[in-house]
Image 1 (tube, protein in one colour):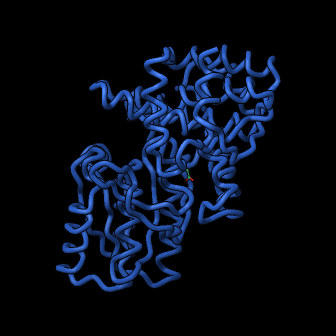
Image 2 (cartoon, protein in one colour; image 1 turned 30 degrees about the vertical axis):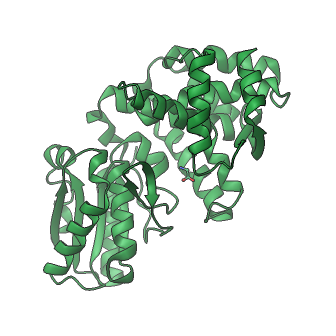
Length: 339
Ligand code: GLY
């Protein structure tokens, strides 16, 4: 397991090499309360400043970005200031966006504190803020200047629900990238027993895909496996007044998109059976009645990744291997999922 000391060692060496003197740590109230002195070891080498955000997705807005830009400007930070994002997906996405825009771009790094951010948001250079009705409606591609090793000891204080949400995303990586990891997850007694090498597989897998398709033009869509239906379920639950965590919706998307993969003849039946047994052990799966499916389809049509009546899917060929960019008519999705 990598420790905080390793990240601090690497940051120290980087700051000295790059002659960075001013570091602003961007974090949220929860992380700040739990780990107020996490980076104190850096104080010897640079001036540390903290900007603490209210926790939660509502901070991921243009209003918050303006407040941080104003703060940086009032403190007269020039382009040599370094932004260190210390938190979950909201902090990494918003912080990356601020870093990419303040004075046309400053250097930054992510040090994620949630499982979801460790294996997804903190990797791959997507930054963003939400518009009122559009998640990540505005953003940039902007890559961090140093990739820090994850500190999985931070997960000890993560609420169970958030750990399970990250686990949903982790299962995605197993399904699209490693049969071996999938079999390992099947044997896992508890999510708390996850090993760091499983996280590292996901991080390296994503880095490898992003290296080949940094601007999300094709291959990177593979990372959206489970997300077409997953996002629709997330929106459906939010609209119904019973919001669920992102990764829990993605896990249900993995279930139904694996089912679609099998029904369309991409995924062998026996492999679908393994997935169908595994996912409900860890996640509640919404039953798709005709009414529910109709609502999900509307959300899919409104998704910025889809056009008209064609919905973009990644399908599984095997557990551990997927192919992106199938354009499927809505009527076919409805038929396959209801029969
Ligand atoms: N979360 C999917 C991607 O970064 O492309």
